[in-house]
Image (cartoon, rainbow, N blue to C red):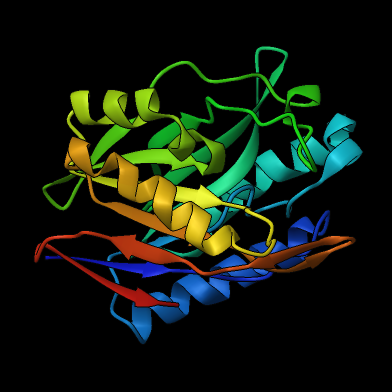
Length: 228
């Protein structure tokens, strides 16, 4: 059995050191108190969301990428699924990294970048092009980020790549009816037979409110979930 903790937490935009401490404390709690094997955090965990034009500062991106390596060494004995801004070959990606015992198990780049309403991700990020499925404790887990799960083609690509369970990291702002809207979208993907873990952040960033409302959709006995 794979025991997964969902870390529905309020992170501070731009304060990488504080967010790093928050991640470490939550992971240690999930490991020691919940006895979880793996803990999933929200989108762009290390820098908060939305970081806006901080993403244009090279020193900020370098600090965030360095924090990933520090985190890998800081919390052993539990796998961490963390969002961060990945800098690679002159491009910036809205990415997810999976760390365990100081080793990178997987790295995924968000494919669907929203550019409407309060979202302006195409201004800052390049889009990923491929799914990411990794094996952990004899389970095959796929990774997605927020807007990805609104696209059936991305869900199907994860299933075709061998995913048995989908982990999705989110920074999805609240509006009236939004929670039901999210659940309706996820339910439409049932035909792919791929259960999903949906982790959303909480708190407020300027005019945006993040309501959490994390949930697990149609999972088998092989998985056990608990809030961190």
